[in-house]
Length: 251
Ligand code: NAP
Image (cartoon, rainbow, N blue to C red; front, side, top):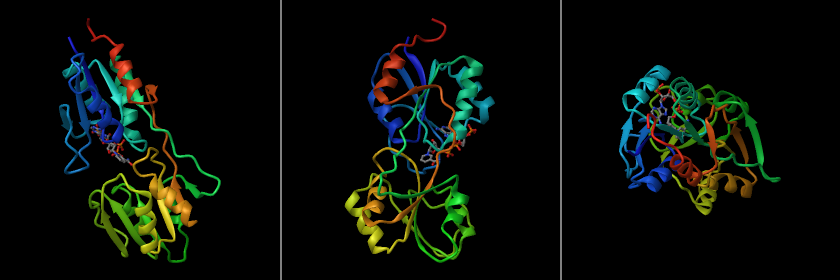
């Protein structure tokens, strides 16, 4: 009997894991997406979309779908989903692995100003009008309406849902990975003074950090939240090995 696996996804790593285990007869995986993106990338394994309904809903899902193991491969900033996964797996006894993407490390010539959240990032931009490159999820752009004196260029996969947005905002719809030379060109062409970013880790969106470094631009870096985890996995291979070592529950 194959091992029934729930993958909490929405990231490059989750998609890489899905590709690696597609067709693996030992595993019966389902990839879960929050549903934030209207046109998600096609996946080679079955998917489901939308929240579970809190911890209680996830506990019910694990039981109804007879899930044998959960892999949390959500984004480093998706802390609520991870907290729910830890609580629901503890309650049901379902093993949980967490694929944690390492943080970007500050280089000697990086000009990072690390802040706790998007609100603090908006305050850190200061009183004087600046040209700001916002490289955040669409859930946070509205926060910068509290600092309306700045010009914002926000790069997003999709438009923000909120209606109260900064008055001087231009949206650039694009999906990574991004190239270092293109990022430098963009920051120059838009005469950007400061970049606001999350410490996403990984390679897909690192080019803007390298471009800011090359141009001597400051980066307001939003620190990672505390993200509860199960058994920490460094990469997709470790995750697959962990899954192969598990037996279906009730066997
Ligand atoms: P979050 O704050 O941790 O989660 C909020 C709620 O969204 C969860 O309680 C859950 O609803 C639902 N949810 C989140 N991930 C889910 C998943 N994979 N499958 C089913 N439901 C999910 O997370 P978020 O910041 O909203 O992020 C949502 C998704 O976008 C995640 O899959 C994450 O990997 C991806 N993402 C996030 C960021 C970011 O910066 N936050 C960046 C890129 C991608 P219920 O309580 O109803 O179960």
